[in-house]
Image 1 (cartoon, one colour):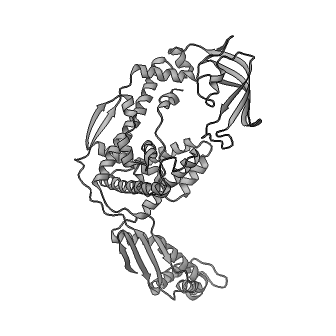
Image 2 (image 1 turned 90 degrees about the horizontal axis):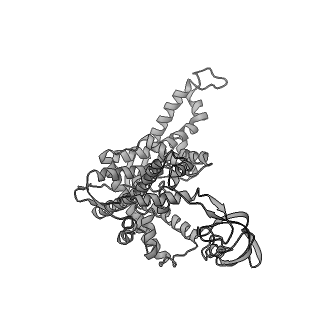
Length: 498
């Protein structure tokens, strides 16, 4: 086998591989000889089939198998011998000429193919002694625990029918019929609908007009759908709702006691408080973790400057750009609404993709040198978490991860990345700083704009979402998926306690 480097430009490599026809024929003959004692052909005794006859019958198919095996196995062997790592799966180009291909299968021509790929650049790891982070810590107060429990209790609050006019906080049971331009619209009709005044569940202006109604009242309410309403046929339009009030009920007093805990399926009020406190601490811990992680990544970004494989950057940019356009479509906004242009946004997101890939490669090298590994148990937990997010689609999810090359990397990459961050945190200087929850939750404008989404308004969103993730470079961005946004403040404690 002759291996010749035909291109070495930056990180790009092109290798020409030539396997002489006599070598291919020798391999084919070995397989024919092995098949001689196994095949059964009418007119010949077992083991007595002439090799020439076997070659005539099976030569091309055996040669085709050899070609497929070479294309599958040799690229990895060649890269290993050269001491290189390919950023993505090497591209293999063979002859497209039908007559030339037929000659190869007949062992009448050398088998030639070309490998094209980008190498992972060598990374000289630096000392982590200069890395320092400030870890913001919030002490959860008893009042905050109580406030969250009261929010949870609202979901199980009881109401008692009353006479008199509805006030803020009362529950109104009603029938309603919504119309736009005098015509009823889909989703605008309901019977025995329950609405707590002040809950903010209905269109702005709707609930306020229920204040003062009594059981038996009939009333017409006029509201305007928001311009950004998801249903395009209703967005920005004026609508009327014909209301028939069936009942007005006031909320019973809520007390934080064992009885409340029992209604939530928890054995005691002390245990309820313990669960809620833990959930709040976990939520603040997630925010703290993201801020600490961003500090580490920002410093690593300053420490390491090198060319990144464009194939990885292209794939990562495509992931980001696809998500951005999806977000814009769902929100009904344009780049102009975000105070930028598509061209400017492309440039900034390109920089973000390069940062992600470069940091991913750095974290990958740090993790590899430190012996960081992702266990099978951790992979199973990650897969189970995916299945929980898509109830009823478990089979499709499992089939995807089983049958899609590189899909498992999208599970492994974030686990690997977090374990590397943990490793760094155990080695660098970390200073704890007690802050208020408002200080913890406040957006770090400078950090957001320096590391995340491009222009003006959109820079805030990236810091809250997934822009600081570096896993694309660590595992290959063609398989990595954007992370979800961190849990909102409103959700602290509610789901687990309920």
